[in-house]
Length: 339
Ligand code: NDP
Ligand code: PYC
Image: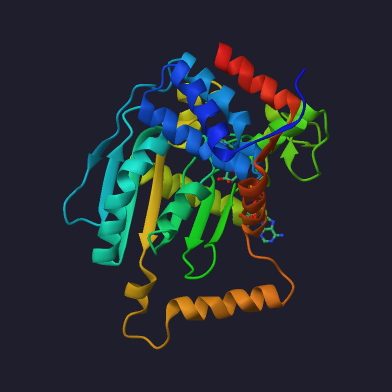
């Protein structure tokens, strides 16, 4: 048994990429997946870090994602809607292909959207939001998942955990970014509780009969609950409308019908809306970036913290000390590389 250890970000990237290459993913897919998974570990977001590798590999093995897919960009010249068809591959590769066109179109028009269709998406959304803010643009990102969340007042899973993320670029600081599931917690958190043999906090889930439960097994067999009651339920529904129906892709119940299980990564579409703060504020008094700083200062000055602050602090530690992995996690990576 190996000891807890620190790996550099580059060393962990190489290991994760090698696992995916060995599983048959082409260079683009393997590289893009390794980037988001390692970013999750680097930023202490365990629910979307290396724990996700096995799910991605299972999905490849089940034939539900194409490991050699090459995404196709439809630049839709002049339009505010840029489309990338992931061609049955992972969303991350499609996003990397579409981002430069999205940024160029947003600068020209003030607002533009990147629609990704026919993709498998298992990752956190903040890497995508941060990539848009690096272009000096603000972003809203959303996608469905699979039906595991009961709308408020209902007892049956219908909505997905439907993540929703936002980013605002800052000149002299990391961007303002939030990214959360519209369920009380991401499904990955429930699974991590199950693996650790821990009970869930109250209010996260109901069992198959619709009664509140703190047992992760019963929660996985029942339904998760939306965050903020009817408010989260409505936002989750909006994501089904915009991030699935409007872009002509699968809704969360349709994803579950297609996969027949929640043990594989979900197949659907994704919507990324980018906005130029300068273009929106043009002709109005004040610099939007300077005004945003006043807001952030007031938030922090009042004793609150900004979302992503924890992540950026964890990132700084990983960049200096490397990424800390337990002995079990190192063994898991070794095992996956040998498969
Ligand atoms: P969390 O509840 O862990 O965090 C949500 C956001 O709130 C983060 O930006 C976090 O910043 C911020 N935050 C947390 N606490 C505070 C605080 N006290 N003050 C200010 N901000 C705070 O997220 P979830 O568990 O809901 O989601 C985790 C991840 O799961 C997301 O990245 C999401 O994209 C992903 N996901 C992906 C799905 C998919 O289908 N692809 C489905 C569902 C979820 P910080 O990180 O700094 O704490
Ligand atoms: O954590 O809820 C989740 C999730 C679903 C798909 C990817 N992540």
